[in-house]
Image (tube, rainbow, N blue to C red; front, side, top):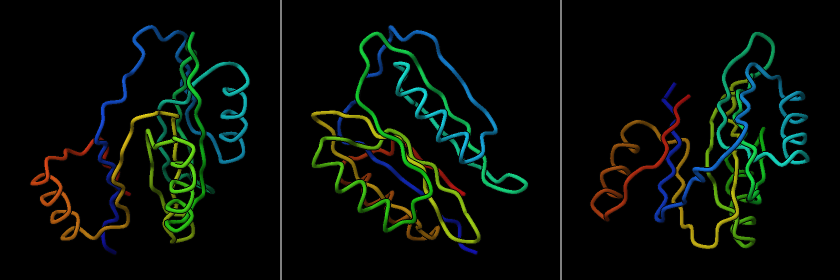
Length: 157
C-alpha cells in the first residue's frame, strides 16, 4: 500500500501566544472521549493546539494538547473526515477565516480519515495536499520549494 502523506504549507506566520497557561495533555482517548474532551476544553477556555491519531486495539486513539489562554482564540476541531469531507470542510470554513493548525491522518477500516484543528486567523493562506504516493509527494515538495514555500507540517500514516 502506498504511503499516504498529508502536507500543510502555511504561507503566512501564525503567532503562538507565549503567555499560555495551564497546558493539558490527554492521551489514548477513544473517539467518544476525545469529542467530550474537545467540547469540555471549548467550555473551559482552552484552545486545542495539537493532536495525533493512531491505531488502537479496537478503535483509533487520540492524543490531544490544549492550552488555557487569557486571550482565547476561536477554534474548531473535527475528526473522522474522509478526504472529500476534509476538503469541503476546509473550503467552507475558510470563508469564515478558519484555517488548519494541525491535521492528523489515520486509517479506519482500511480507508483514510483525518482529524483537524482549525484556528480563526485573518491572514492565513494554506496549501493542503493529502493521500499522495511517495513519488507525487517528492514532486509536490520540490515544486512548492521552487515557488518559495516551505512545509509547516507533515503527517504520514
